[in-house]
Amino acid sequence: MTTIRQVKQEIRQDTENWLVPFMDFVDEFRRHRDLSLVREPFETGEERFDAMLASMIECLCDELGLETPDWVWDIPSCRDPWFVSGMEDLKAISIVESPVWFRRRKIFVLENFLDRV
Image (tube, rainbow, N blue to C red; front, side, top):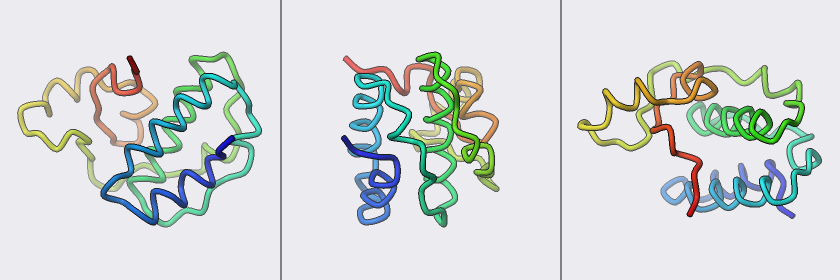
C-alpha cells in the first residue's frame, strides 16, 4: 500500500502528472480504509500540492467516518486561489461547487472531483 508520504514524493518528482498518483491514492484509501496510510505527515514545501493533499485527506476521512490525523490541520491554505481545472469557464461553478475541505484552503474544484467511475 502507498502512504501519503510516498504520494507526495511522486508528485514532487513529476508535478506535471500529479493527478495520477493523487487519484490512485484516493482509490487505495477508499478501498483499504487504513489510517496508517496517512498517519505520518508528508514533507511540505509545495504550497498547492500540500494544501490539495491535506484537503483530500480531510474529505476522505469524513466520507469514510475516520478520524482526520491531527497533523493535517497544520497544513496552510494556498496564498492565492487555485482553480484546479485551469479553465476560465469553470471558475464560477468551481467556487459554488467546491467541497468545504478544499474551499477552506482556497482550492476550487468541481463537486465530483474525487469521484471515480
